[in-house]
Length: 398
Image (cartoon, rainbow, N blue to C red; front, side, top):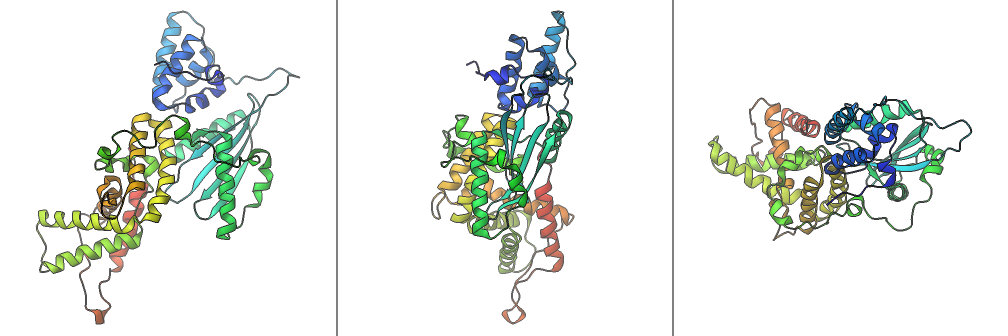
């Protein structure tokens, strides 16, 4: 089936070509370049082909298209030239929005932009934290060249570009975050008032989530079969933040030490220890991912799925949605959290990082008498847990 693109995307100028590419899914980017080739949008093709930071599917397709154009004798423009409106011509502005999923610091960014080709772009970044509200606001006027630098730095910071969303959706989410400030007691940044022209007008009812707007099912067919092997989704950069708390991971180590002590306190063989570890990770997964936490995780996984769809395409996004449905459907007896590979993987990757931090040595806390304060971790063990969580959060997703 041929993908249908909007007129704005099909007729994107050179300085808007990367934004047009970013507005479609990864598996549609080559189709967009083909559409540009058919419509003779040479400027957009040249801009994407010559931009090393362009998404790989679009960049490769654009370079193939350039070869086709050269074979036809078509003169190629300077891809970095910025079109400027004629003197006295009316400047048309359009409002666009972006969303970044939650990161390992527990923060999320919504961006609104007022854009006119060849003119300065007005930008506002609103940094939010679930449960707290709006934390920071920054923005201002960017020249076309500074705007391209801003987009490039946004991709480099996270390893993926922000997800295009409708302005109505971004405004609704920012309005919801502002309402959380009243509940949490966190002060609203004064800078918010400087960007009322971009942030005002939030709808009363929530617009369709970008995933729903893209036509993806929130309950993918065969979702349950995808759960056990979903641990590798931790490699997706949008999901690096899914980690246990230090307290939850400490409890896992204590329980593991108790298992070893109950078996005589001697160092178990590798197979026995692996069995203990699997059982305790499963139990820790059930303890940590409570109903309340799974409900919070549901919204965050939905936002992550939108980013994965934009960056990597439909199939991996549907895997994230399958995990989300499993997380929301999990119970205490049947379909428990331990049966979801992605949730178990949060403990598995943190344990693996701790082992690497300690040079392959595993030192477990063993039970102590009640008079002596019970089971405790040493300062070195606590430091190893903290370092392991940092390493797991910052691990290269590739």
